[in-house]
Image (cartoon, rainbow, N blue to C red):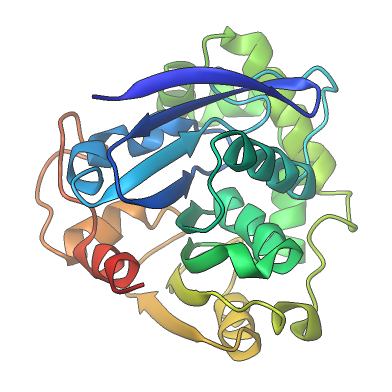
Length: 265
């Protein structure tokens, strides 16, 4: 059974889903998505973990009265949620912005994260990513990516106004340099076992990005997925045996190589 609730933290309402018992496992979705991104994997993961999956500030059913978003602030929000749930140590998976949030969490309170898997994450935003962010607009998305817009509409009950606010946050990231600026020395303070997963054809975060993470984080492993662009979620599933419709429309197994890494802890 999946439990749903909202907690008041840091001046906003943070919505989260929770299921299962055992070792706490935090799942953080990518920007523009919500906790629904992880729903097909709840049944599988809840067999071994206490799964906690929040909606990021301003995403899904979480509020954002400030109208602003940063990975640093979201890391504070997530720690406030974990404190409210009386969870001291945990394991985690972060997809894209979720992984960047985990970098803040792992350097802010390194003793709390036992293991984390970072998918398509980055310690800084390179110029190709910033250029993409600066030109983002609702009108461009509506014209160029209608199927993607429909998919995120399904995850955001606030409708197009909520999505417009997220696009504005995304644009602001392209001009912000004090949120994601991790140096190798900073990353070297991470004590969690770290699995880095990245696509070899990521146009926004080229291959040097995950290599930088791998070289800087002391206890890290690196997995490069072949023929894989930024949206590596589907390929990660398919490389380990998934043959269904993507995104999955019914419960399915979590990528086995990541699941084993998390269990080994």
